[in-house]
Image 1 (cartoon, rainbow, N blue to C red):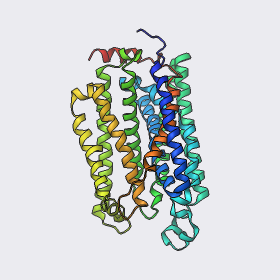
Image 2 (tube, rainbow, N blue to C red):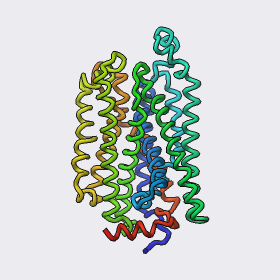
Image 3 (cartoon, rainbow, N blue to C red):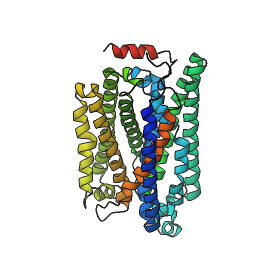
Image 4 (cartoon, rainbow, N blue to C red):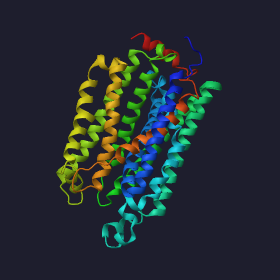
Length: 394
């Protein structure tokens, strides 16, 4: 092994400035959009925010899955997961614009509207501004504490008692996954489902969990392929590692499709007045084209490509599928949010592009900063040598 420290290559540092400039430019455009079209700004900001938050939370969840299950697939990308999860404190601050824009996003925040709507009056015990903000603070507190402890013990594994720190991470991950599942379910209800407070889905939280895992894995694959082009990771990542990651990506693609089709099938067969308008809106006036794009490029094409063993073992081809999935994750979130405001037909604003880019530039700069602060491999993990040797044997 040529680099016992496994520090991030200089190319990581070189990418920090371009993404920061892109982020600043995007946020400047968002600021202009806020001045000229306040309502559209908050809609677009919500889409961009949920996308980048999903990568951070999905990374933390997959890291906990790895601590619980083990495997070479997680050891070689664990530090990427951890760097993503350490961005959560800043993402908590970036939630402030959503809190400030509640009146522009959520109809249940308007007292006069609630008074004349029987359904909203019944839901007002849960859907009210103080409780909404209190829940948001609770979610972020839980996520930040989980991420902080996992990262702290991971660092201790490098410098202290390996057995104790490894066991701590395993024990926390069991309860942490349950806590993540509960919090993201309620967060998805609060921040996205309540855009239309008359509609509900009992599988909505599962859809978000699967989507965040998919987005996090696709992003991590893209970063891993980038790192595999440079030392010290060029000799670490093997075709077998990418093969394992590709199989997991295929599983998440199928999981996303299963959850979404299940929701559609149940609502379609139930044919209830309070449920069917959700899909009627999303299949007419141009939105049906977006739905078809999701079916083809979020499921059918990635599914077909990821069936190929050769593609999964090639980092350069696997990254193309991963980037396609990331783009479609933004489209999917746009499909969840925008039709609630554009019920007359498909409409897209330039802020729908500027907001994800602006938030993404800032988030990526922070992620790359965090990635450089620790070795790219958990050097003293008891299973690391076995994972690297096993990959080389394939």
